[in-house]
Amino acid sequence: MRITSQDDTCEVTCVHPEAVERARAALPEPDCVGRASELLKVVADPSRLKLLSALHLGELCVCDLAAVVGLSESAVSHQLRVLRAHRVVTFRKEGRIAYYRLLDHHVTALIESALDHASE
Image: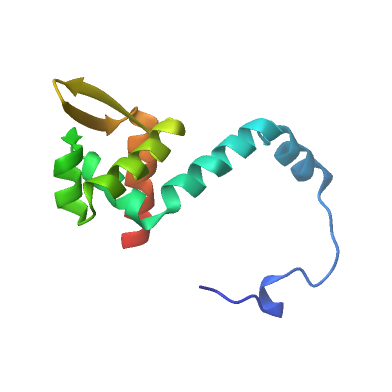
């Protein structure tokens, strides 16, 4: 983590109006920022990120996920409910077995990017 020093701040106040206006125009709507922040908080939990990493390879049942990440089935089910409530994963039932997968390519890209960035 980088600590702020005097070297990485402006030494004089100087606003560039055109750049400020372009940046303001590109800002997402406040409700979109709120939803995105919530999504990032949800996937930031280490247990949930492990589950998402496992699901990155494809669909797994709750029992398999518990074995992969080393949590109880109950703990995995709880985390999956949180992820489902935030539209990160989806599931299907086959008899009495629930199979989970990442919801869509956006989630897949988010997980890939986060892990790629962390491993650099």
